[in-house]
Amino acid sequence: MQVEWQVASVSEWRAEALIFYVFENASEPLPGFKRWLQENGTWLTQSAALRDFRGKFKDAAVCYGPSETPVTRLVLVGLGPEDKFDLDKLRGASAVGLRKCRELKLSAAGIPLSALAGLSCEAAVALAEVLIGGMLGLYRFDALKTRDLDPADYPERLLLLSEDEPDEILRQVPPSAEAVVSGITLARDLTTAPANQVTPGFFVTTARELAETHGFRLQIIDMIMAQELGMRSFLAVAQGSQEPAAVIVLEHVPPGTEADPPLVFVGKGITFDTGGISLKPADKMEMMKHDMAGAAAVLGAFEILGRTRIQRRVVGILPCTENMPGGKAFKPGDVIQSLANLTIEVISTDAEGRMILCDALAYAVTFQPAAIFDLATLTGACIVALGHQVAGVMGNREGLIEHIREIGLQVGERVWPLPLWDHYFESIKSDIADFKNVGDRSAGTIIGGVFLKQFVPDHIPWIHLDIAGTAWTDKDLLTAPKGATGFGVRIMVELARRWPDLRVE
Image 1 (cartoon, one colour):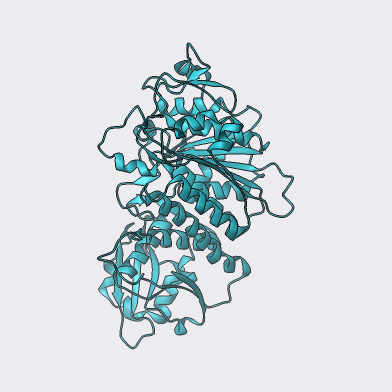
Image 2 (cartoon, helix red, strand yellow):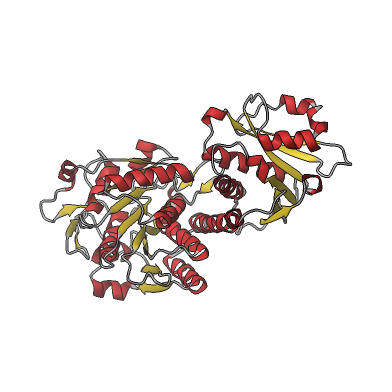
């Protein structure tokens, strides 16, 4: 969908429909809508349709005007009660409005800038979230379908209508929002596509294309190089698969940042997870194609970094492999030496994510980073604890954890802190190695975080995000249709944008 500005007097606005926002049971419309009604929409004030629309969140109504008027349709979308308004409501309502335009097969829908007046946020912020939420709500993955396809994507154009020439800040909003949508779309596409397509090699190809497009530095650590470096924990998981594994290292190094300690983003890239020798149940195993959602999110974040040219040095590390029960697969009871020279007793080969992440974290430390942020579909226990719309966040800096939580609230990626107290380490003590890769069934998400914590020195700020529940949705959400969500992309980008102004104590 193409986003365009249309700067003209209200009487000259041209669109197949205008979208306006309505608070639930409000005593009067928002200022921009009220003015439009007074000057151009007297036909609607005389209609029962306006009085009947209550403005409940997720509701939308289409109002038809006289054929001789410049705009013959209005799409009204509800924001819910004004005292409960937040950016999530604005994103969701925008998705509802644009989906309604798609249902009507409209080519050009318009959102007046004045429609956002009166909301409790800055105009540029409101416009950005309207665009991001609206466009993400239209996402669909149909690249592999060959029948029952709609040949056109509606609406084809989204018009931003304004009486006055928008200032430079507002002018920058659409390309920035489109970059965010592009990054999240990339993450969703990678996560949704089948595992026979999105292999470790496919990740390498995608990373190479990003590097060529945006000028990133790229290093591909193949299995031979990984052996030479000592990434035996990563290789233990990889050795059961016929697909060549790789650790992908991307670097975004804007001019003047070469000497800066980088932010390092690490994403789990298990492109298919059978559980290995500790085989998973057959039911729903096909969903294990999305066990690489962390790595996909990192690539999505790099797409945004490249398009927006954020002036921050950022490194992305993606350990990518399948976890298969082949003849050479690692086994329960094996003891593996990691890149950090710590030894791990394997209790479950289905706890493979932490096995590849620990070597990636140890490699991240070699960059002498300002901070490390890893995200992974790590534990089913996180879904039990927090459900499908909240991720678990852990780390070694309470201040940074709180910043991540606040960022998540602002961008619609909610997270909740879990403790990493020392006593949890008792669960993974081993009689024959430095520690085990799992404990008992209790505190499973926390134990995963405790395991990873062993590989990051205390002097380096570190955050771990468990996105097992949030990476995929089994039902349509307003801004994320059923399937991959791209969760974590926006948190990473905002972290890069705001660093080093965040308090990390």
